[in-house]
Amino acid sequence: MKLLAPALLLCTLLLSFALLESSSAMSQFCGNKCEGRCAKAGVMDRCIKYCGICCEECRCVPSGTYGNKHECPCYRDKRNSKGKPKCP
Image (tube, rainbow, N blue to C red):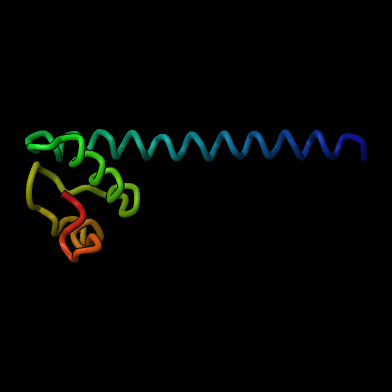
């Protein structure tokens, strides 16, 4: 019984590290895809910010620097509070 609490703590830490690695891998994926998508954007930091938000939620980014949103319907259909496309 004395070893149950430390063993449980160790398992919790290992699980949290595993989840942290998987989320950072997705962020790296989105970062690379969004940099390519926003390469020709006039306001690159804003483009990368919103592309990253959309990528994390949709898990995809259309190819190219403009258009091709048919490749990712979730990305295409995201709207801001004013009803305009959220994703660049």
